[in-house]
Image 1: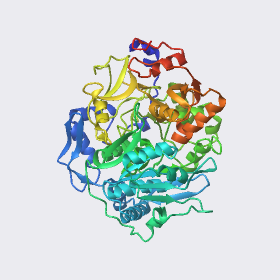
Image 2: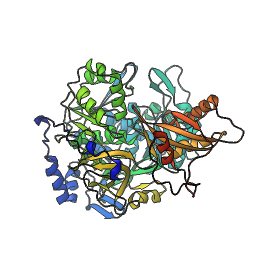
Image 3: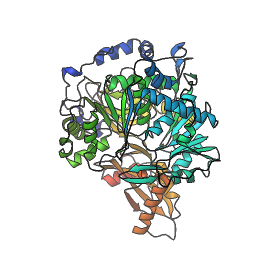
Length: 632
């Protein structure tokens, strides 16, 4: 693979060295010391971190590893919400602000740790009253409001397994996720508010549960006051009505270390989305550790992650990680360009944000609009800035460092996945940064770039990104499809194959290039080619479809579809618009093709598999590589 990479870029000596004020002051020490301590005693490393948290019963062993299955903190008992809430209420953070929320309409709500614990307990008691118990699945389809976080924590409080679905998904995608999870309860809101407009959610949900027999109750957070959404008392419950009269104390369910905490559906390259299952103890320890040390969080920091809990970033680095640490978390439903492209920088100035974590898509959008917008605001409260979701290209890194970080803030460019649950590769605070390179494995993780046989590649060359040992926050299975879990560990013998291509620099820094399989990352969201193709083929005019990702200067990638029509249908602008609308209604706006090309045939292997890389190579004017398996 080495001929495919720009060695000049890989071996560039460009470095950004943080000032002495950014040297680590925790027990971890500097990166090399911490990493060597981990290698010398991996279990001892994680044991020490876990002991910073509260446990109902301690573990018999830190881990049990029977390839490819792991158990972490074996036989320990805990509840993650006791660490996210009760622990802080008991330990002098009772009146500290946990959540600070700001809405588009100027509303602001503040939850101290005590208030958040009380609200979570009341909602958890309400769930128990309607029959939700440990092990039941609860689907949450909500906008970025405090009630979404309360619902997640309430599920975890009573041992129910939450499945959060991003509120941008359409009816078909939501229905699939509800049915796959066999959700007993669905929690939603009547509307979300985006760019000054009310976006109805309730109609999407009501339609999606028509063919979901497992659903016993629909809980609705009613935001619209006039006219309010009507509640059918036999089946539907008002969010706050459910909490009425409920005690503000709720004893947390005793969870085994390996009891499931949540499942989160992520797009697969083939077939249906994968229900990634995370368990209680390892996930808690991994997200607590990485939030605290990767972001170098201080007691008085105000922390803002711009993600949504509909994705893993929101689970790990809005909810569970920061609250386990005891941080003050700023949350907003505001989009980065409404009412103008300065709104996020205005919020940073007003709220005095110290740690800011966003996506390369947003950074590239701001680059396009110029430095004049951030220059209008005082960003000197920022101490650490981060990136997540896809590779941060060197140009965006340099702009982010200069325009937002003011040439002083370290950038933690993090690589990790829904499946990993926690940060795996980054440049730890205090270490030299290299534009284009995420960095090295965090202490506690063994990452490498390997060839197809699993052999480590030499510095300056490329290969497949792999993890060579288990880690606490690793997912345990794919819900009802353990074969798909094992595939991660069996694709390349002996390692976890992440599915990403990467380059190893001379100094061990890793540059992540992007997906090696049929996943398209659009604005930081993983979109499975199979889902978009299935949506297109479900239209009565379409016989076959294939989609590819095309480089986009802002979104990272846009989606292009190649469509074969059924006999009797003719291509045209009207049909193209119909197909775009059809995908939008089926999957939601994030999966809509930017282009559609009508074709007579698609490149396939002799076994009938569509060769998307051939389509992509032709589209981008590249060499398609080996096409010996291509059908004549």
